[in-house]
Each structure stands twice: as structure tokens, then as C-alpha cells.
View 1 (tube, rainbow, N blue to C red):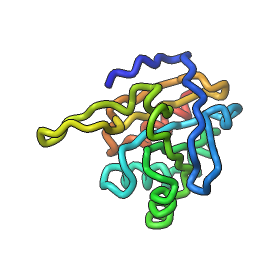
View 2 (view 1 turned 90 degrees about the vertical axis):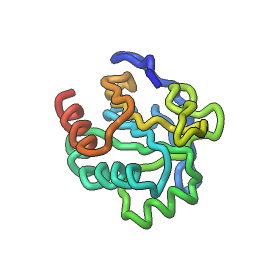
View 3 (view 1 turned 135 degrees about the horizontal axis):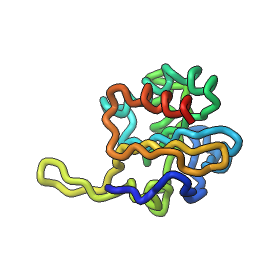
Amino acid sequence: MDTMLQPGDTIPDIAMETPDGGSVKPSDYLGRRLVLFFYPKDNTPGCTTEAKDFTGMKLEFDNAGAAILGISKDSPQKHRNFIAKHELTVDLATDAEEGGLSDALGIWTEKKMYGKTFMGMVRTTILLDKSGRVLRVWPKVKVKGHAQEVLEAVRAA
């Protein structure tokens, strides 16, 4: 996956379902910077570590003027279980099975593992400025140290 997003670009304002059955879209965060972290699946090792790392630093992100929104295609019920199991405090959203934000950004794409081909989420983080424009994109994220790197970028923005 090579996202074509560049600094200054805008992303589609596509609504996603929240764990409580509401809805959220990127424009809901206008006026603050927004960290969108797209991850493959709730309760898998890398995704759990990433969500816990962002949760552990949430106050620092808040103090730096940035909101955090984790996005996967897991159901709202799976998100509720994930939040409860790991005491997550970051917002999560369920991207649409088809035609969602990750599809529009090219982050939901064909992947291969153990000789099998399937559709999956490429772990990607996007930092938006207060007006909703892209400040930075991290494609194919490696989890270790990632939340700290994103926080440093937020503080520098």
C-alpha cells in the first residue's frame, strides 16, 4: 500500500460507527489536531499494544491539543469488548465493510500471508491539522515506539 496522501491533502469525511452505536467522522474533530490510527484487528498482539500505547499517552496527546481515533473494521460489539478488556481510553470507530474511509484511502487492501490472499487493513497512522488537512502519514507502521513518535510529531506541528 502506498497511500497517495501528501501533507496539505484533505481526506474524505466518511462517517463510521462508534462502539456506543453513534457515529463519528473526521470533521467532528475540526479545531483540534487528529491522530487517526488504522489497525487490522481488535485483541491481536500488535493492535492491542498499539491501542494500549496510545491510551497510555492519551493525556499527553490531550495536552498537546490532539484527539486520537483508532479505526478498524471490527464490529462495535468487538470494540466494546476490546475497550473493556484492555481499559482503553482512546476513541475507536468501526469502518464500513465496504466503501469506508480505509477503502477510500487505499489502506484496506489485498494482503498475503502463508500463501493465502485476503483483504486486510494496512497499519497506517494519519495526523490531521486543526482544519482537517494532512500533516503527516505513517504507512506500514511498526508498533514499537510508534505512539511516542506520533506524539513528538503532534508537539512539533
